[in-house]
Image (cartoon, rainbow, N blue to C red; front, side, top):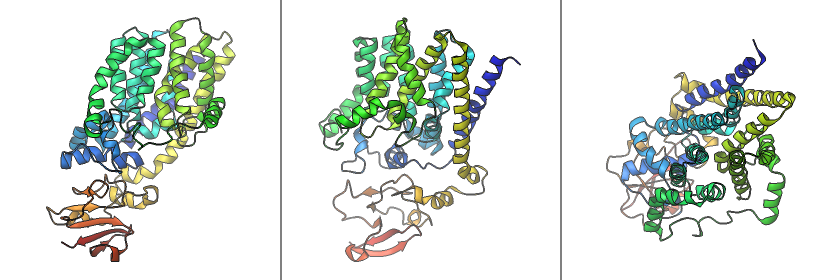
Length: 443
């Protein structure tokens, strides 16, 4: 067996294994905080109430760009929780396909192309996002598609995909600024045209077309000058050892390689590197510098790193790089296997979802779980008000929350957590093992 073929096999093993593992994760209970807070809860509330906007504190995201959550509505209706999770899974695979296509355009050998895909897909962050109902992989798919078409000179299609990314998350407005600097301002018009409905929706409900930006809801979004400089100067460290979600052991290295690739004489190579580097800089000055915001720029860094390594004359550096990719892939695979082990009882059918969620309740702060089915059995037609609980995707009935309903009159039941019964105008009729209380309200 030739060395090149051996490298291809070694890169492919963790890559294929993670594709399979991530697929299995689609069919497990959702445990992601933001998914249980609003990514899944908003589509579920639309199906229950046909209500789009929820004023007040809890679901202020209801008026932000919600392209992914809108797609989740029929997926949730038809396939349950696995439908939205499958959308994220396919977006992760699609992002890998576009990385391959960008590298193919530049006549990169197969081993190097696989390495480029591995640098993106064989990461902890992509692994757990692939089996969750977040939206960051969907945004990443749109942005890497925009990169591919922009490199081919198709600025209209590139702008279309950027518009879809903006409709997924306001943060893609930063990507639009970067693409306009790198590829030209002509991309701005199609991007804003496609994303226009989300500006109009936000303006209709709040009078602010980019709500909650400049609304007081989100404060201190950028790090102070000192922290921003520190994050930028120590970028390889902060990317490899992030404060929230781990990526991979080599992400700091590919950031440095992307910087070195700016020396390339070929304009497309410099453009790829600039998109990745400027996007990384943008995410590092955000407070906090979440790796989920960085994820859409990881494909550009991976491609830029591959192109730079490919340009080196000494084969030793290429070999060291490829084996680093292999080791990184196997390392991430090993920790993903450990993390996935808790789902084995669910996957083999020896444990039901409710038992699983209750057993992992310590990892689900503020999440409603109807552990004994009491709330689900409340009389049909009852008006239920919820207080204090934060993540309500698993609530089994139609409900309102005190954050958007100021007057409790007319409601039959109150479901809350840790309330003093003497302060409630009603009778405590049930408390489950998670200390979630149900009160029958006085009328």
